[in-house]
Image (cartoon, rainbow, N blue to C red):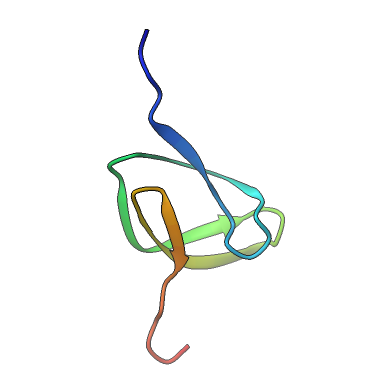
Length: 59
């Protein structure tokens, strides 16, 4: 049996499941994550399934 080491990303604001799926070894920096519940795009960093809002200069 093949193990599925992937998860759906969740919105950091409302915790809704998004339509973006990542693997365990996926690294995203300043990724524009769109949440269909919030109807907004949030730039995030994802490393080892840990998601946090991206700190952008000037915002």
